[in-house]
View (tube, one colour):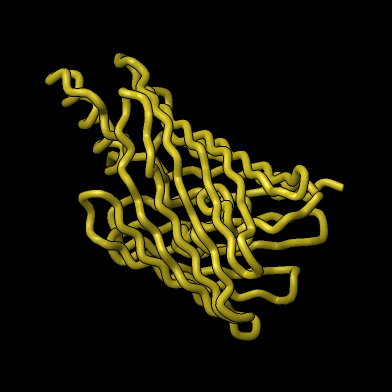
Length: 271
């Protein structure tokens, strides 16, 4: 069984080459990568480097660098690999996030490089910006690449209620790839050890997708997450164990028509 997203990308490239139409439309984003995958890949809210790479407005100023590495085997029995490396740092009272993501196999690959930062406008409200570079490679075809700018925001309405939003690829440059604009908005409610997150995602030419996530924590030691995406019918679950300097997580993504995906991740806070 062939990965649906992979098929869409391949068809886009083939059609563009045959008809000599430029640019090629890229379809980056693998929903099963990293700890956010456990809660339906909701990345407009949360406190994890892979969420910061989409919405850097979530970051707090901290002087300790944080490194996060994730590996995923997308859709068991298919020869696909996915991984990411994220580094959060603070310089001169401003936080920065740098992230590298990969998805593909020997014949086809997607690479995404993200650099983001945030501005605190007032207490409980901040905005973020990322510069993105994305590259699509396929055996037998020329490599396609392009850049874009994305904007994001985050607001704490109360101690329990937070909201976040992202508009991806607002401005684009390069003639090789046209990246689909993606708008995401979400709300989070915390009560006791549980956190409920609801997000809406709208990508160009696709219907609105509702994403539901539930995170249960016990202090700062362990977390359990579950999630559901209604448009694709994907369900997910995972666990995360944290100490003061290190964390380890596992996430499982279940697609109704494709094999299960399994992934692991390691996070380090440097002294």
